[in-house]
Length: 466
Image (cartoon, rainbow, N blue to C red; front, side, top):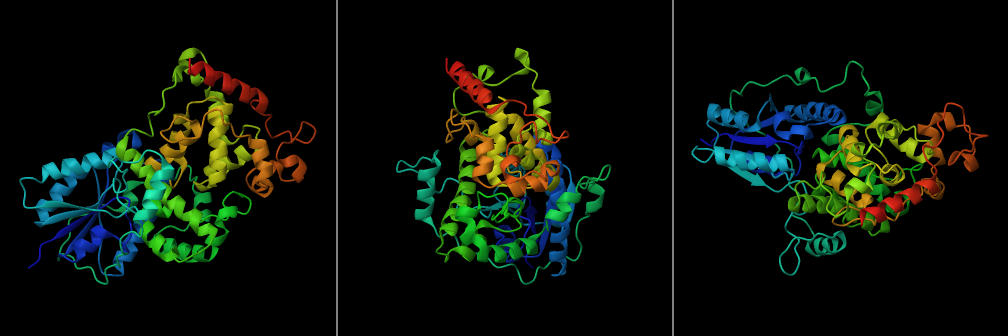
């Protein structure tokens, strides 16, 4: 008889194009295991929005397995101990997992490999979450790329990605399964207070929802090249949380859209490659979302508490969407309500924190980590360092986005009316930058003027370079 195969689930909560599951299901009876391991992740344990999405994604995945008369085992604790224990209990021949590149996941894979050395069970790792495994696209000398554009060109030369794998038609399991936690006992959902109403209204979670969205997007992707910059129209895919949680793979998306000939698809393909690029960066620099790459005197560049700067009030105003800049406030309130923010507005809001308020980019990165349903260690860190000018490949610090003119240029009036309702009655001439006569009394004055902020930021930059 074939032996038990364990599938270690992490951010790959799907059945279709799931290489670890595909291999395990072809080798023997399967035990899928998801472990909530907050300790190993340390200060990168899942934020509140993450946990909300995870609950619903696991709930949906359990139903999908249930349609094949199979169940998922849920456990909480140290991943290595839990997997070792289940392997010993069931006599498993192998633990299958898709590779993950966050430092805590890489460390766990190494530790599990070492822990299984003297056992009858082996760890089998698969590539399943990216178009190409990090390290595939290299320079002529065999080194990994640091800069996006040559990386993108190299990846395009290596495409297509591997073939898409079908979901198993049947999943056999042992006659008895190890004990499993109840998902509700993990308390992943907010209750006191329940702040997730906006998330429930905005999102449908799970693999089926991801594929339904892809089918819709296949008809809409042609609008993406221009529409991606218009928050009021929001012609974006909103696939990012489904991709982050692995409810759908980028390989599936690529194959579904590959025959499109529009500029929208060409631009969207580059966004999928940017996601691979971010993994390529943390593969080389595991602490990239926490450590600036470029050499600035950061004690001089940022307003710092240890130099007597009082930044907490400004930081809180930014978090709550009370900066007095309507486009920034709309974005931050959308984030708070829905766990997501339009990408053009993400750049504007990030630039405002870093360059208008001169607050270290890491404060913003952590807030996004805690509040985004798609908060991804690699993509989030790479994007923040791009905006801050501190990254291996980044915008130059002196290029300072002007939020007021950006708002008007990209026609954000409707977006502002939706998320900053106290400004809803203003006409388009006033809503981007309401003057004192038209600004409602319950809307804050600007924390700092744009010209003053720009001059302060440029001076701080010059001082930081010595």
